Amino acid sequence: MSRKALFFDIDGTLLSELTGQVPESTTRAFEKARRAGHLLFVNTGRTWACLGKIKDLVEPDGWLCGCGTYVQAEGRDLYYRAMPEQQRKEVCRALEAANVDGILEGIGGCYVNSPDSRFEQGRGIRKAMADITKTGDWSQLSDPIEKFCFLADEASDFNGLLKEIQPEFQVIDRGLGFYECVPAGHSKATAIDQVLEAYGLSLEDAYVFGDSTNDLPMFVHVPNAVLMGRHDKELEPYASFVTKTVEEDGIWYAMEQLGLL
Image (cartoon, rainbow, N blue to C red; front, side, top):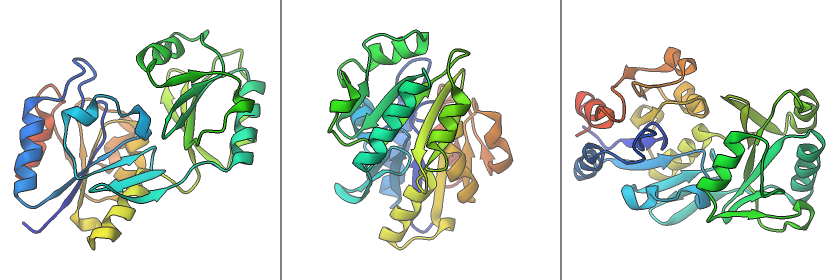
């Protein structure tokens, strides 16, 4: 088989959300695919600072972070986009006015304007990312920010917030009142195009692996789309192959069945 470029989501695809680990079979699949001459990339909604322990659990050829806002291949930066200062300030004002729990995400960390949250998930995020989360007055923030998320409930002005941030941002519904906001023109699909162009490969040479709604752009874009056994239903119409769950060695199974090993 000619060289292919493989792109993997993290949570629920490479990393088990039940055990917090990458299966040994996935590590072996990476090693064997690389020996076969293929390129492997992590393609995630997480910004660089939020990658956490996954950096120590897998060894890809590159990292595509923040839904296409940062693209790195073999240690070389191919693309980076942070919000302009004025846009960042407008986003912060809109989040505060809408009474949501906003989380700004940047290459250097995450930023919240309160140490606590009325949302259980917000408290969980702060705890899970305590080592990279900074709390303080957003008006004093000068660090680069690529994207943001927010939690909303019945006390939030959700529609008012959408009017403020659209169409400059694509708002991805992650479920349970959690929303991921990505600058317009950026997605996991645009990150893939950056890599394919750099390596002179076509869309037909690409394979994507994912499970959740922020994987939708790459599933729509790439014809070889592998859907994990546990997944969001929105991805099903675009899947070319449905594999097993992470815990059932789904990555190894798919790559073996598709002749990538």
